[in-house]
Image (cartoon, rainbow, N blue to C red; front, side, top):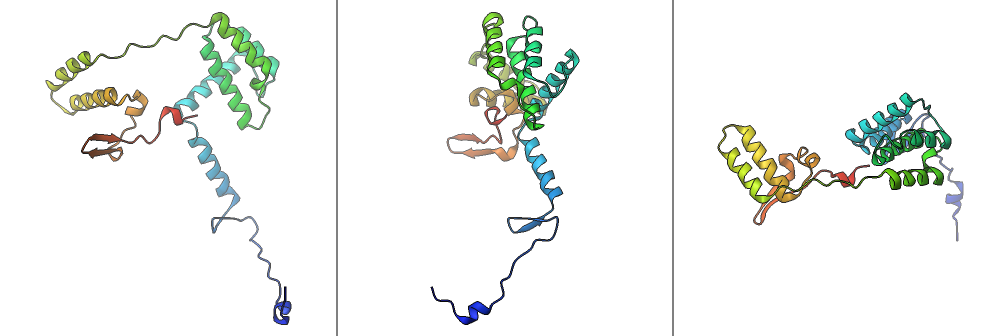
Length: 204
């Protein structure tokens, strides 16, 4: 490779960012703004309902006498204390809440150990009850409900009828129906296309 004298004499230019600033996609952002943005994304990753459930689980653990952070032995004692009182699925949810708390606080996860998981599986085997599935609404019953709503006046009856029919024929969950907005609806020749902003399967 040949380097000209002109190139050799050129001064080396080093770019130095101002103190306290970080370059992100061509813009300068302070560490405080980055931290705030990071917290906003972390909060968005968990739904409000899940967050409330986790908080309730943590309060239950603390009311029992637990302390945070905790170790594997404390988690096992907690499981054994409620093995015959709480549904195993409830215990599993409480375990998930404890796990999430430790991970996001930067502590080792005491609920991730093989002993804790095996203890929970044993509780499920001994005290687990088969999940009772709600009976599906029959089409004949839906037709009767819609026919009754059509006899009523007001927007509430129209809303309820629309929600019932969209939920039935679209197989939507209640939590999905309440998030629907006009912008998610698109009329096409074949019918109505609904795009959900998020679904339960997308949530953590």
